[in-house]
Length: 309
Image (cartoon, rainbow, N blue to C red; front, side, top):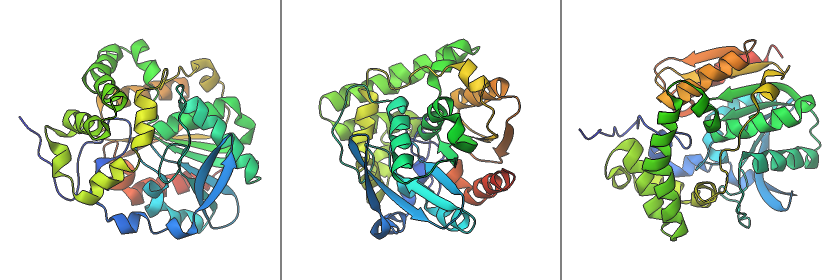
């Protein structure tokens, strides 16, 4: 049976790990309302666009894949009342235009983040990572724990853990063979829209891409270079050492959606076992799309956690 898409809230998200489809129904002008305040940092051989607001202890926001700094628009106001907020687009995300490399991964993104913090003279920060941005945050945390005040992870895409979780290998195989590899092949053939269609067909139903508003399709395509970089990478989901994660002493908050996808639920449960001291919040009624479905609940949970650390 074909799944129906609601106009105001699209219940599934592109590629299971990345951009919430709810963003596609948002107003494009509103998503870009901070663009006039963007700055550029030349770091680690690339240029990163970033936005800063507020003052005080720094909080760094890391968006998911096929998204960009605009994902956090709803959080900028509430967070900047209490903190210095750094919201940036990762190296292949809008509006960045950096040269491609064949081994793009969250490890590369973590190196970019180190260089960005150095350039902005930010020594210790609260780090908030979502989806693929959560994987980036974890690699940063395991390599530079001394630079963290706290770590907030919203369903990080630790795909390499799935084979060691009961039932996880089947979920990983389904993801890779049905969507990830075909999307990567389309990107190699320079068929970016086909790559996005493959992903949308798999997660939101046949021909769902054509049901999105024009501004939604433009938002997706504005970040297609990252999608290509990841789906054609030699190692898009590098293994994250469990023992390094287990050894982290930094205060950690794990956020998950009550109705998230099975593989992401498996990953967050495993992360809870590896990090038993971590606080955990489940956003009622939300999927992986939690930051857009329930921005107030996600923001309040995170700010409450940050206030204690």
